Amino acid sequence: MSFWLLFADEMKGFYKSKVMLVLWVGMPVAALLFHALTPNDVSGAPVSLVVSLVVGSFGGLLGSAILSTTIVNEKNRHVYELFLVRPVRRANLIVAKFFAVLTCLILAASIALITGIAFDAGKSVILSDVLLKQMLQSFTTAILMMGIACGFGLVIGTNLSSVPAAAILSLYVGNQLASFAAFPGFMGILLPDTFWATIDPLLANCLIGGITTPLLVWVAIMSFNRKQF
Image 1 (tube, helix red, strand yellow):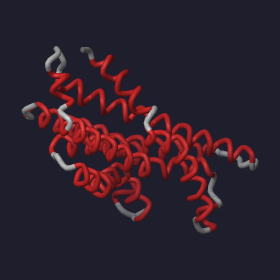
Image 2 (cartoon, rainbow, N blue to C red; image 1 turned 180 degrees about the vertical axis):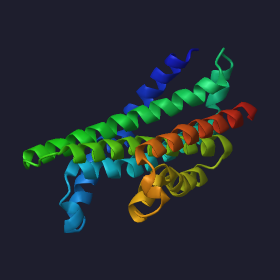
Image 3 (cartoon, one colour; image 1 turned 120 degrees about the vertical axis):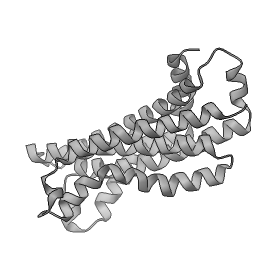
Image 4 (cartoon, rainbow, N blue to C red; image 1 turned 60 degrees about the vertical axis):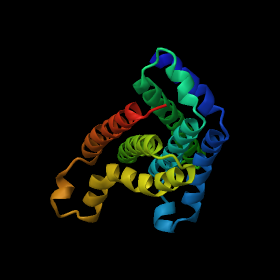
């Protein structure tokens, strides 16, 4: 069974799930609420910029939990025994699941961003070139954060057999690890007169995400390959 067939099968399962339905609606609502409830100096920012800042944490949190608990559930129900009697590469099972969840997250994040832009347009908010650049950087960082969180969810799912433990570790540790992708940008803001301010935050975030995410996926594949089903 090829990767693309597995990917299509995983997509059908995830985008119809109740959790993903929460994401389709929850990301725009969470961003609007965050915008409404924050202090004036933050709430005065365009909603689209706030959305791009919020979705990485929110999406990564749920993506990591979905992947880890799904894999643990499938292991406990001996689902993989049925797959592995066919000519299926174990790596394809893991990678297809990763990209299916990440694709759904990116789509949900995009819906949230479009909602934010539409909200700004309705309020006649002008998105300057600087704001558009900040929004693009923040949204790209959000995607990188979600990728790291999903990679961590794979590692947890392939190594644990307890659903509650997988969910707790994904929610707490996974979210903290995902924040690592935004670390250079935050340091540049907090310490403007230091070395961190000279680093391009988007380039640094892309390097961190581009290294950390494949490494986590590789660790998950190695762990899954060693499992006896």
